[in-house]
Image 1 (cartoon, one colour):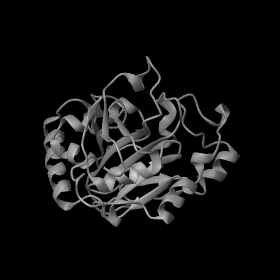
Image 2: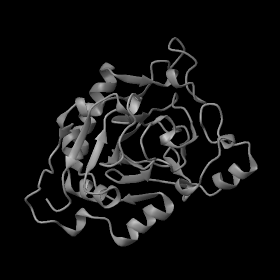
Image 3: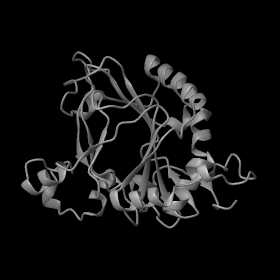
Image 4: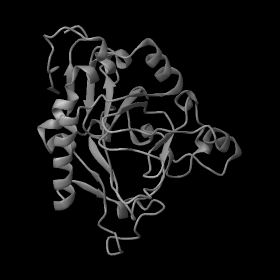
Length: 273
């Protein structure tokens, strides 16, 4: 396990490095919280340079819209828009700016408030730049991110950094508040483990959805059990988001599973370091 140290561990802790009590309560009760302006303009600019180069040159590993077969995605690689990139995978290997982002005290210390003193970033999940490009972006159905993950506890946190504006028009994330505390029976999910939209009891939950509109540098923290979805991008500009997942030190991946298939990063040993 690699250690990414807190980039200013010897500096005094600042109030801006932590969630407020109200924000912690919101995360616990609603399953998500937004912190405005957490990502600096300098780091976002550096990330965008890496992202544009990756998209222009199709630098592997990537995921194409045609691979997903979601509503709105091209039918095949040979179809029009078939080489539209949905995700730039393995963001951490693309440039050191992503490691610097993970080591920010204002990020790590907030995660420690939720997950405990040992914060670990699995590289097998997310660790990517999600793009939603015009014309060929697809819809993402309602789902929980834990569906293909294997840990001793379903208790992980996703951190979503907006590199640009995220609005209803370009397919911002939608979240059902409180859904992370709902125990879903298998019958409420389809074969691909998406939340079924044809069931009246599910429709009641979907009606509670909230659109999480973000400005550049805003960060969304959401629980891996929170039901979320996204519509297509109907604008002329691509939407870019950097996404990583985190677990506490006592929440181990299941041996032999995909979750245990790649290295992990220990971000910092203590909230008081």
